[in-house]
Each structure stands twice: as C-alpha cells, then as structure tokens.
Image 1: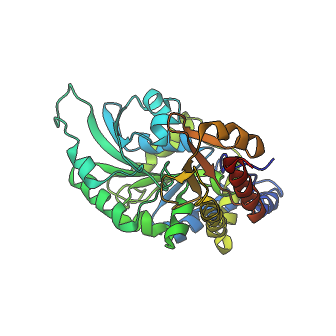
Image 2 (image 1 turned 90 degrees about the horizontal axis):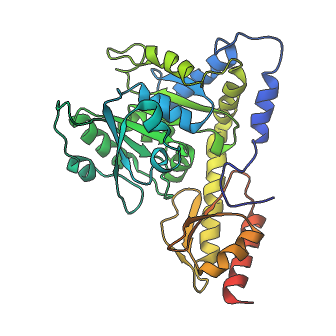
Image 3 (image 1 turned 30 degrees about the vertical axis):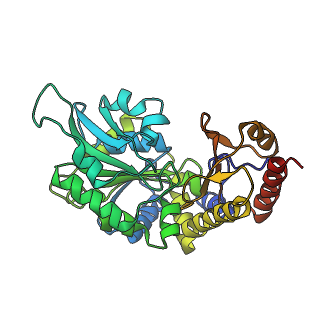
Length: 350
C-alpha cells in the first residue's frame, strides 16, 4: 500500500534498521546507561549545542506532555495555536495529565505571531485565573507552514519579555530545517527556544522521539535546572525505555551523514513535485504554501472518495472539501506522478 495519508504510515529507513541491528549485540546497561545512548546524546549536542540535555521517549504526545510538565505547574497555562497538535490530536492528554489550561489562538496559517501573544491578557498573580507560563509553536506547523529563524526569535523574545518559556513541538523539525536550508540549531537553540520535542518517527524512525532542554539556564548545569525533575517525570509518565539503546541507535543513524536532512529534503521535494503537477488541474486549488512535506488542496467533494480508493489520504476540512496529501521519506516520483495523473483524470471526468 502506498499512501499520502501521513508520514507515520512509512516504515523505518534501512539505515535506521541497520543501526538497531548493530546495537543488538551482547548485553548493555539499561535505562539509558549504555554507550549507544551516550553517543546519541553527543550527536544531539553537536547539532543543537554542547550544553543541551536529552531525554529519549517513545512518542510525540508523551514527549510534549513531559516536556511541558518540566516547565510548568498545574495552575499555569499554555498559549498555542488552535490547530496545534496538543489541542486537537492528543485526546486531551495535556489537559488531563498536566492539569493545565490551553489558551488557543486562531491563526490563518497555523503560526503564532508576537502580536497574538501580546494580545493575551491575564491578571498576573490572581489566584482565580490560570497563569500563562508556556508558549508552544509547532515546527513545521500542522498547516504545512514553517517558522523562519527570525520568526522564532521574535516569538521567543516576546515570550521571554512576559516571563514565559518557548516550547517547540518539533514533530517535523527536520522538514522545516531542510526546507529553510539551515542547521537544526538555527531554528531552535540559536533562536531562543527553551525546550522542545524532537521528532524522529515522521522522518524514518520507529518509537524514537526525544525531549531536549535547550536553554542553558534550564539544563543540568544551569541555575534554573529542570532536567533533574525530567528524569522522574519521564518515568512517571511511562516514557522511560529499559532497552533505550534501540531507540537511541535510531538517532545515531539520523545524525550520521545527515540522514535526517536527506529524508526530510526528499519528502519536501515530493510535496513540491505533487503541487506543481496538479496546480493547473481545473476545479483544484492549493490553499496553503507548500513549505514542508504536505500539500493542502480543495477539490470537488464527490471526487475525494474516488481518489482515496486509489491512494489513501486524509480529509483535512470536510466542510471546505480540503484534503491533505503528505509525503514521506520513501515517497517515490512514480507515486507522485501516478497520483497526479489520477487526480487530473478524475477531476476532468475522463
């Protein structure tokens, strides 16, 4: 089955599987005390900064919950886009497990701006009102858009000026960095992000995500260290792997010879190829800029199930007949050309 439904549908990259197999030799210390995990942490630090602290996890929802938990208390709140994954795709996990309020802001493109954050008003210190503590942005966004380094920095400065932390949901951080043609730290550490979830699953791994504390004041050597608590938080929230070397090995693969960038660049290129191939199809409109690995299009409602029989994909907005076509590290040119040809044929009625 070939799909454009989600990059979660794709399997693991062969180099990732090779790294897992290579780590499957002899015994090794459990719970992250192994040399493979130590090497993975070294590679994270090479890409994000020598001071960062890294906590391997299983999935994105767990990463976001424990990452934010380390930064806030239950009476504090998170400011995020209304389309944010933590708001619409995590089954209420942040509210249930953090006990915290989400302050959601409507955005036209999935991106927060400094002015949006500044417009959020609250009575500081008032025990009757949740106190904002974290601003969350997603990179790249759920709408397929991305933040430039300058945009991230402006949001970070705005958040910090109000005493807030900036947290990044980096489920598709690789696609954003590859599309911008910058290093990972340019849109994270160097842009003022305090902490983040780092996605691997959507970029060729399996059960390999991480929480990364970026702000040196919050790391184990800082004066506001949260990382001492994070180990306990990860255990309590069932994100601590006993055989961590198998997830860590996958990050060693991603960071070797820039596999993370190769995978993401390919997925992005396939999205661009698809957008170009269907741009002139009558009755089809591409509604959002193609800045990562997704194409968002509106088309006649009656054609959607016909196309889904050919290649599964998600309907993004049923009322608007908007669909999302998402490319993966293993999407081929043939996949794109074949689907584009089908789209043209179905919409033209031939």
